[in-house]
Length: 370
Ligand code: SAH
Image (cartoon, rainbow, N blue to C red; front, side, top):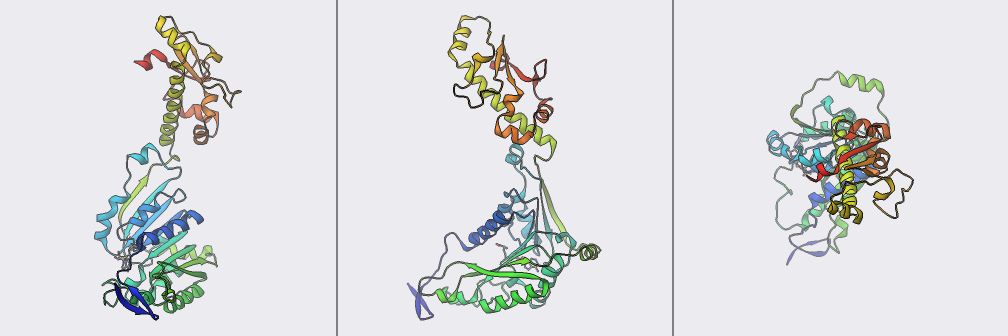
């Protein structure tokens, strides 16, 4: 079906992007985060919090903030950011605190100071002229994060869409072509000590390449670091945003979660080793005969081609199964979580029974079977 003629090219109506442009914009931010590993990220105009929800899975991020002028949309969507059972069963390595703020992007609130990345995805076109004029001073001058990503519609693409509305969304106050966006962005960057690079998302159809991407993006990087003096001055400014909610995630930096994670892994490895032991022919014969179990060290090897031959192996004495701490420590996950053998011992001390010399974890085979 033919709708319009752009740059001399006839274009089909109902242009659709797969994945949707909104998802592509979020993916753009996520790829940036994966590459640059910021610790503190704020999403301004965060609306339904979907970008924040996606960002919370990134291990580098320890502080996430969302801001929107629409308080209702925040209260309706904060559930996306709440912790779930999985967050406690498999805690993050690093802490994460997410806070949602209600307020305007052009208010100089100190809660948004010191961020590594601020994203403004499809936000600026919602600002009134006065707000837009204050925006660079607040974002680049005051918040002054290390990097800023701004996306906004490219109006040159609009004639490719069917339908005759002026803007893509009824709340848009303007939509810029590439020259307008780039000269605004270059001015702001120059004035506040940033460099800026332009890119975009959403390719035009074949033959209409001259209109550029559907979404235009500016990526700003600070070239002049903040002075300590400027940070001190900023701290004296009052908070204006109200906090809609704060969510604190469990992490392995907290000892109680670290203990749980180590104990879970230790038990899971011990049970695997015990299963191998119980399924060994010798053990089956002995169990059938009703004799007492008398396995000693080398007989309970869990694997014939053990690459960790030098490490003490599990063994049985009577009806108890012993796993040396050194063996447990040789499992990469346990080593990673504990760092050293003494820490392993300390972290599991309350959860397991140790052998009398403290070198192995002991479980009763019969009891465990019951
Ligand atoms: N960033 C979101 C949606 C953007 S829609 C996404 O990627 O899907 C624009 C959002 O900006 C809306 O939720 C609107 O409430 C918010 N907004 C508009 N003016 C604002 C202002 N002055 N300060 C903060 N948020 C604003």
